[in-house]
Image (cartoon, rainbow, N blue to C red; front, side, top):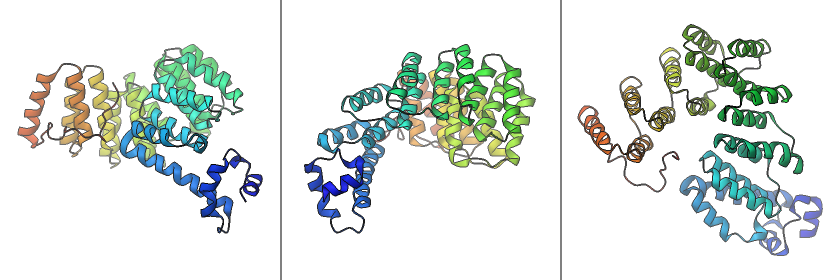
Length: 363
């Protein structure tokens, strides 16, 4: 029966007799055996996702080490790599990718895009280019707009604006790559080119919430506040992507738009009555701490409590405590603790208790 399954479903041929013996008892009475096998494979993937969500990549890696080699497939590697990149565990992601390739599995287009983005974020543009120009053709994977955006992001992170402009001319110029190109043009001083690109996106109706916020942040960064507010007003007549709004705002903070992100958050909250997820403020606070602007970080915390009427959660407090301690600011942290306790009855140290499932952003 297993032979007939693999004949009808070629991608199952890598399964050995041992794997077949595991699956056949549960599928031999199924109306659609192939669908049942696929369901079981997805279930294994879901187990891995749950371990990642609850216990992190280390626990998931331990689980993978207990899985027989002939039970591994590309999906499990792809899940691991994507999670590690999302957690900014780039060294682990690269190691897992290398192991995947060594074991003869093909990475997905999503995984390749994540890796290009990861290497760009760590300013290793050479590896990002290697994946794009060498490995994509090797694995017969066609580049996507997301991959184009990831390589443009790599050029931006490394300050290679001319490389970005040259590459953009050959890219698919979709919504993702257009949006990151707005940032590159405005930050490199090519304001008129950025405005022309944005106008073209609007005329073709090839813009979204991310591109509007990107353009507004660029204007605010250049102290062109009137133009920034005018762009934000487009949100009032647009379908705001609330599902991805938090991710877009976090990406702005990672690009260094900290003051700008606060201004945009205020507009969304007070003007459009849109609730801002606390993760956005945590990301802003983390950005200021990383820049050693501790006063700015504390002002954002007070703004969160007083103006946005949101009490910080444990993750936010752990981010603050870890950041202050890492920078040798224990005394300043103690003063902040006293202030929060006296004024708002918030015990920052109680919220900073050790929790294995709670991890602050990587330094």
